[in-house]
Image 1 (cartoon, helix red, strand yellow):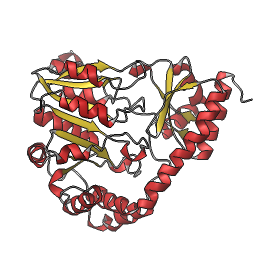
Image 2 (spheres, one colour):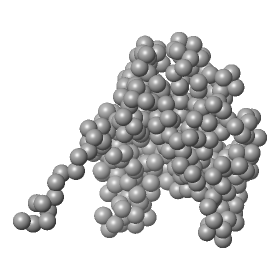
Image 3 (cartoon, helix red, strand yellow):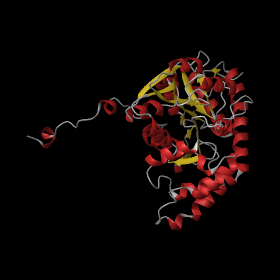
Image 4 (cartoon, helix red, strand yellow):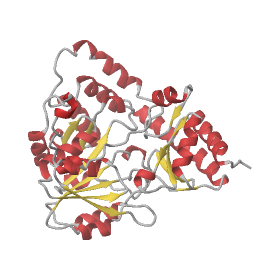
Amino acid sequence: MSAAKKKNKIKVPANIEELVPYPPGKPIEELERELGISDSIKLASNENPLGPSRSAILKAMGVLGDVNRYPDGSCFYLKEKAAASFGVLPENLIFGNGSNEIIELLLRTFADGGEVLFGEPSFAVYPIISKACGAIPVSVPLTKDLKIDLKAMAEKVTKKTKVVFIANPNNPTGTYNTADEVTEFLDNIPEDVIVCLDEAYYEYVTADDFPKSVKYVLKERAVVVLRTFSKIYGLAGLRIGYAITRPDIVEYIDRVRQPFNVSSIAQAAAIGALRDESHVEASRKLNENGFNFLLPKLKELDFKTVDSQANFFLINVGDGEKVYNDLLKKGVIVRPMKGYKLPEYIRITIGTQAENERFIEALCEVTGRALK
């Protein structure tokens, strides 16, 4: 009998057996290897096309010679800098290996087998981590205009509800909920339900009625404001995110958090990034210019888009999967939305001007449409 036949099937808990791994955006290297092409562009993962600031790079390089030492487990200096930048106290902050880790820590700490609410479609990690932690994921469909339906979500809150995730702006739609809508939601649910306002794209928002969410924390609400250095700060490869919340919530999460979860390089780069406000402004301006270029072109091509407050947006192309695959052959990587139950859409990240122009050219080629 072969060794393979002798092996017994590993016993896996049902909640793990049912999990489907998170599908990341296709890497440029993988596409070029598969198709034997070069000079590809990636507009799929909501990354900052400007990359990290020089300040962040220099700070990261400055600690490379000390990587034989464990990092500061409390992120002391980063907390001091971030607290001053965000108008909170260091004890209001907790850092993680990307904001994804904080989502996991939050659920491991507070979900306790209860229900976790989120919009659908929204960030795909919410149901994955909920199931992995033994919680019960409860999805609430978006409104007709693809916004998170806070009224419907409030009605779904029960005695079993432990945590609610509100991605604002929402990923993958780019839509947002206003300050009045969020405040009304918080006023209509029990105060012991933890509400995580996931603001990964906060720095790109231009809407005047967007929530000033830190005020909920300062008013002692059970709110966790989740943000990241992966997007506008351009540090996605270093994996560093953070939460602003009440000190007691931080203290409980710290009991679950593994020591040294944020590398010394990531901490240094984040400090450097916070010091470089000009890079953030340049990134915002690039994003604004990208929208101003792309939206009129797509309207001229008779494609419908979804209004977005992030650095990405949805385009209705009819058959998102087909257009995605056809664009790959042109060396342009976007994100198909079939897995998010929006099969007619693709999602595109704002790129540099040259990348945006190339996307429009490739889109015309694969769809047979032409600019006037």
